Image (cartoon, rainbow, N blue to C red; front, side, top):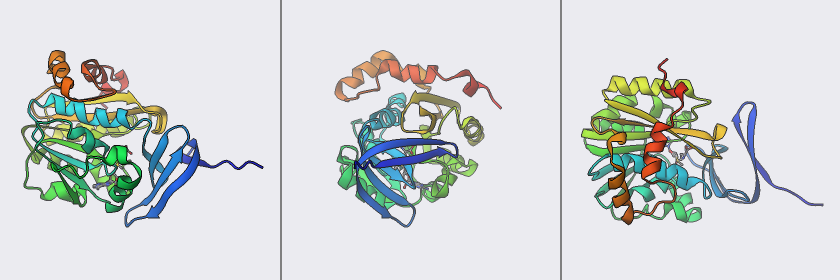
Amino acid sequence: MTCELWFSEYQTKSLKLSSKIKDVLFTGKSEYQEIQILDTITFGRALVLDNTFQTTEKDEFIYHELITHPALFTHPNPKKVLVIGGGDGGTVREVVKHDTVEKVDFVELDRMVVEVCKKYLPSLSCQIDNERVNTIFTDGIKYVAQCKEKYDVIIVDCPDPVGPAKGLFEREFYKNLYNCLNEDGLMIQQTESPLFNRDLILNIKTYLKEAGFNIIKPLVYAIPTYPSGFWSFTLASKKYNPLDVSPEKIKEKLKSIETKYYDEDVHRGVFLAVPKFLKEDK
Ligand code: SAM
């Protein structure tokens, strides 16, 4: 008799993603969520929170490069960066590739996620202890509401808008983000599936406009382990437009930054290939 081990995520009530797994490397429950590290056959090791894929060794570079570099290359001189969420460390790893960055405040709710990822996902978490990274274990929603600091770039690497992450998608949060940014600052956030969550993305756009951002641009890309395989970020900027950054400048800077997905063509492409149904206001 052969015995197969499978993990299934209910992506919606009527859609499952199932992955055959070699092993369950970690399973535990923090104050906030259930945490698992699975060793999958197709995607390598995966971080799963409350039965939802967060990141996998196979496709993480697509997500982490695109949540970081389009924003950091749009700002001409990013020195101070705030990362909210992103407990696996993949975003922080990409941010510290920019040598203009002097300080990264890394605000993650759940200490256990960081500890588990340090142990089981070292290719993602490898820069969390970088001397420029200041890890703060607290709620990102409260942090920006009380924050006296000003940042050049804020990256919101959040899970789905449920539980403690719900408030990271609400009107008040975007007002506070705006106030935490310098006069020429910009932010980017994980904003779910264009196909399944169009209304959410359009609401976020409205909240960002209300908060005072001048330039608001969704960017889209494919990622196999998230619902529909089609995913988005939204970038909002006070001053700089990502489409004004010259390809030559990106090419030059990339000589000292190693990427597998992002380059000067991808920088423009992710913003330009936004589907018509996301451009239309409600
Ligand atoms: N790439 C992922 C995705 O799209 O699903 C997100 C990955 S990252 C692991 C998300 C992190 O956000 C988790 O570690 C979680 O603990 C953290 N988080 C959730 N709510 C938060 C909050 N209010 N403040 C700070 N971190 C939060």
